[in-house]
Amino acid sequence: MTGLTAASARAGRALLASPEDLTQVELVWIEKQVEHWIRFGREVREQVLDRRRRILFFPPGTTFALVRWAANEHGTMLSRLDILRAVGPGEPCQTIPTVTPGGDILLRVDGWPKVERMLQLIDAIEAASIDPVEVAPDHWRHVHNRLAAGETPRAYTMQRHRAFLLRREIGA
Image 1 (tube, rainbow, N blue to C red):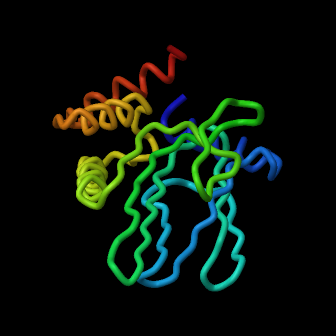
Image 2: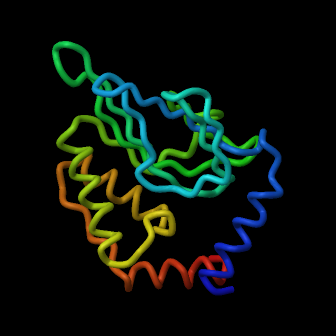
């Protein structure tokens, strides 16, 4: 199956999933107070609650990046970026605020310098013409571990990406 065909098949399965099988992410945007956004990901549904809140729905197995930022009168209180894999019904998961039921955490960084670094790494992946949604989950785990150890992560190259896609295609 080619990447395009595989993506189409996943999208088709997502449309068949019942709403309770989808991972829900509540996004809030109160300018300069609480700002949650998706940096990358392919939701299959959106529910607008009001002008400041909406819920995005992700099918099992999809990867997305959630950025959460909050401040008060003294400055930034929270800067966090999580890269998550949406889980299926009954699948074990970690709890994350605003994510129901939770997700498989592939990467988590706290603090604006680390969040900014991750945004730059995501930009670099996109600059290499790779959709971050399609990046190997193990790469995000690698980046998490390297950043946690204060080390520089390996770049995600087109060669690594092709190897991952071939491995996924043969079911390894």
